[in-house]
Length: 223
Image (cartoon, rainbow, N blue to C red; front, side, top):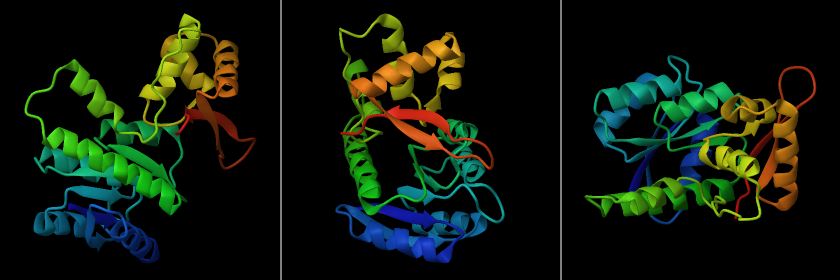
């Protein structure tokens, strides 16, 4: 059983996530915490394998908490569960060691798909002591359920680079992000993104800010 601790400042939301985890094969919810301090105490006492970790906690942010736990040698993974949609927070979570990032609100099926993928990832990694490149590629690919990783010989080289950037990043990317990442103009990036969406390789994800029109961002097409 994968021992899971839910860390969320909202008591009601934490209970919902805990109940959902308990319904998923191979998982056991060992507790809930609502602050960073409570999470640290619970981790030391309960030794969970996985955290469902909110970014927004009253005493510290979840990403800093995760980073400090890893710095202290705690062997715990984390899936971020948060309403934070800005790309910098997504990237910070990836750099901080999160294995995945779920944007609230999300349904039971989304949570189950990610936990199923994590279970396979953990089983594969726990069964190996040495990994060749093929094993490494497999393990990293298992982080995202249903992620589209197939390459198409029909894709032009630059379009393939755009697709690879979307596949390999932890969160949704905009045309501006792609432009900065691979060094093409924003209009060119948007043209390739629109074509990749039309071909079914990626899916549109609208990001709403406090004002103005939503930003078109893109994720790998799921299963």
